[in-house]
Amino acid sequence: MHADLDDEITGLRSQVKQLRNVAQEIGSEAKFQKDFLDQLQMTMIKAQAGVKNNIRKLNKSIIKHGSNHIVHVVLFALLCFFVVYTWSKLSGR
Image (cartoon, rainbow, N blue to C red; front, side, top):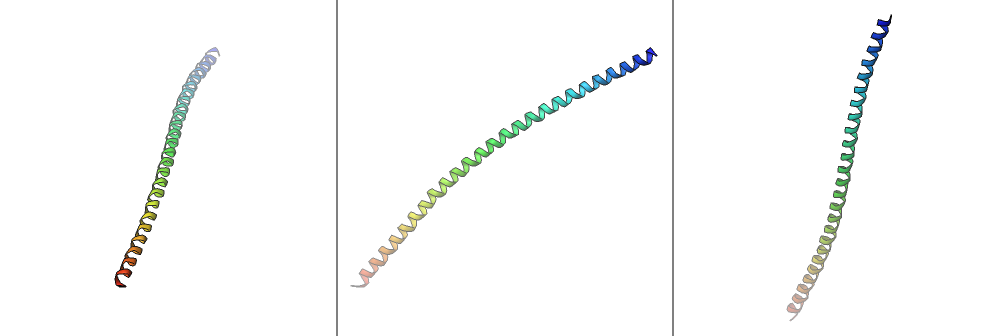
């Protein structure tokens, strides 16, 4: 009877050891996944900041080139006006 009880205790001790090892593996895996998610979150934050900066630069560029476009249109209109004015003065003589 003591032998059966000793065998049972030995079996339980080995199972407890296995469970401890499994728990340590789970803990290690959980830490690895947490670190990975933290790193992924930092990468996403950096990517969002990069996109935000690029959008800001793009908006500035659009505003700058849009302003240049308006200046070109006004200069073209003035040139057309000057050509028509000059032509009307020359053809009126």
